[in-house]
Length: 199
Image 1 (tube, one colour):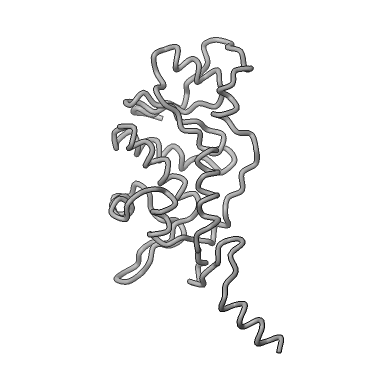
Image 2 (tube, rainbow, N blue to C red):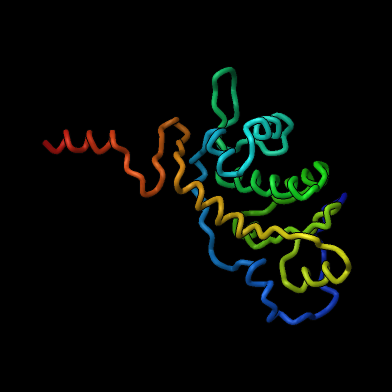
């Protein structure tokens, strides 16, 4: 990538992989995204990402993070954000909170958009506040820290799990606008209909 996003950080040394940092920063476990045809309305996306509706609206209008399930198509229409959108929203929020410039955040979002789910979950974003670096191993992280870079890191797999856990308790809807109850939450109206049908 050009600009201040560096995805080519290569280890300069063969640091020991037994370090405890690798378990926290890199996750090889399979992570399960929600189906692509399931979306979340703006207020739900805000809650899951930890942002305000004003931020969500501004980022959608400026093209930083646009809803992938359904965009706004006129007055009264509702945007629907997919799982990956909310994951990126949460990462953007963390980058902003640490003082990374919007220009660098845009470069990082564009870079993350080129990654598929499995690949995305194995990335750790490191930043010194000015530049953002993609790291895929503990060796790369150690080299950044040794070089005076890498003040903080965001393990995308960990953020993935946080978003997945949060969304499991929030209502979603499909492309047809039908509401989907959160996993483990029963729909009282559906239960009443089932009882009537059984009688």
